[in-house]
Image (cartoon, rainbow, N blue to C red):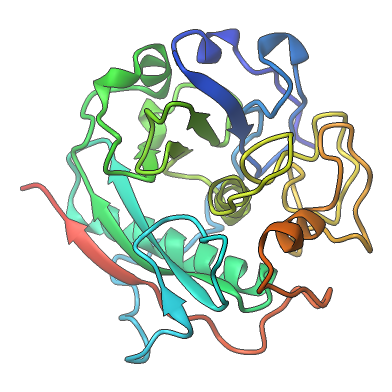
Amino acid sequence: MIRPTRVPSLLLVPLLALLPFGCGGGGGGDYDPSTQGGTGAPVDVPAGPGELPGQPTPPAPGGSTPPGTTTSQPRVPRNATPPIGLTWKIGYTENAPLSTLQIIYGKVLSLNSALWNATEGQVYIYEVVITDNVGPGTTTSGWTLNSSTITTTDLDILVWPKSSWDLSGVAGFVIWSSPPQFGRTGLIMALPSDASTNTWLHEAGHLIWDLSWSVSFGLEDEYLDGVQDISCVMESTNTPWRFCSAANHTHQTSQPRACWAQILLDYANFTHTDQDKASTSPWTTKVTYNDSP
């Protein structure tokens, strides 16, 4: 059993116009309401090594035509008709060899398959652009103390090497800001290089949906009043990977309705059958590497 950990309060001090602060999945964790104002906090423990593919040469994109439509944005547009493919711009903080960036791509491939099934074949990652050397020498805690150390306006995701991820017990988190100061859309996902597929999918739940409910801008954490909703990846751990529906959601004081209930309220063209599995294989995410010498 993974011991729960508390979130350090220093995370919230420097984030200026910060509004909600979404957290990561992938292990165990609990919530400290004294550290922030009513939404999620990053408290999860990364899964152990070996879950995600580490092959230096991932497969080439399969097929010549992606399903449905694609967008250059990292979030699902409200008026989208599925299937819809998203574009993510990922920054790796250190100058690294191409093989390291290829490992990150392998993790995206695992996430893409999980997301495709969790959305019943309605959302996938069409393309990722992975750039290294975006914040050399920074640590995660250093960045949260001074976010200007890394320019994130052209990014959607920041990945730190495990050695520079110095927030003990935190698997990953998503920050929203208003006015926007993080990421291309006012959101930024932060992950250690050893984050599990569960963590990637959990953070994607915070990042990709544009929701209208009062608790947040995306899906909210479902462990803030204790681990109880084992049917949802927005808990701190869940296998198989799925977003909860009205059929299996456990009421949370932090989240007034099931994930799919809110998604369907905001996305008129989406459906959900409680199968939580796609009928086809996912598109193989395209990749572009911007590898510094």
